[in-house]
Length: 167
Length: 372
Image (cartoon, each protein chain N blue to C red):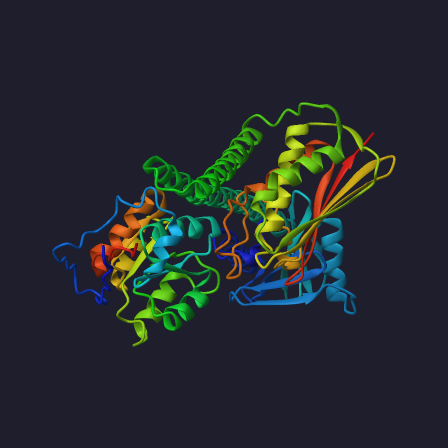
């Protein structure tokens, strides 16, 4: 099946064309490396917990996304500019700059303003959720209640489906 | 404990002002109005509380004037001193004279006035005692409110600490369940699940041990042990938690260090210290663990090259619910129970844990355990 570059950016919605399907259930027996061939959708994970970042990366790569990881707030901001990701997952408790500060700066910079951000944190307090959404986060996910498969679903909901990887 | 009248805006300073005015009226005659003041005595400092409500402080000695000699005599003897220039009425508390009422102006007081002044002093003394009790009760209530607040904050922290490994366990479990992971990643997933389960187990065990310590006290299960073996096992258990930049450096004597101790509790103590060393050296570096001993005691050092702590804050490290949160550490996970529990365990063994630390160059935790 031919690959198809997705040109959607930002929040323009899901576009499905005949013959192009979201291939979520088909990776089962395929090595993750093969999916890196078609890296047209890049996800930035800003996450200081190495074990969590590793797990989410594994899943997103398996789902066909290219993944970069920022281990603290400042590195995350730098990667958001340098790597121009299509999508950002943002932790709240981070060394240096916390997630809210990162989100504010992302929103304040013309180069990163359009990138959809989902907060992914251990904190589920309503006031934090409200603050995150008010600052422009698309969703507020609590890690312990979030299945890694949901990460790709969120990306798809927000920026459109993944193209099928080249085979 | 006595409330210091000059520190109190409430009952006792009002009472003192009333007493001073009363003493002034009592000692005055129609022809002569006598001023009165109260001097609070705290160690060697006298603080004057004038009838106007203003205060003034000065050191009590050395005495150069007869006026001060009269103060001193009243303070030393606890008796009313009546001299030509003034009358000094001591106010006594449980532990001696707390202050003096000084009535200025010439002329001695008669016996009736003297008795009345002594009664005024007694009332002031009782009032101060009552105010002290009220203050003590208020402090106690404040302490217990604070503890309640700390406990709910702690519950909140502990819940989040449990959520973090739980998220990883759940995540990998779901990926394994879906059968989506290639074999190599499957092994990684299983080892992460196992590490995170251990982390949760340690957290829960620390919480249970602390709760038990507070209600029943911990009963040590003593047996002959080799301290070096316990250190080795603790290091082994914590190895998976090391970051990529960490190395363990172990230094010890060749021989066994024989002691009678609670193996499980000492392992908890050491894993908590090592966990702390790993967490608070986020940039990595060597974590040195050394053991030495003489006939009387064993010394175990756990040293990191991490962010360290200020000397002024070091004493807070070992308090229950006493996790130090600064801008540099707010993102670091932890309940604050680990070090508290570690030191309690050392103390239950008749030893102790102390800390030496320099901000930005690391901390050394020193465990001493008696061997005899």
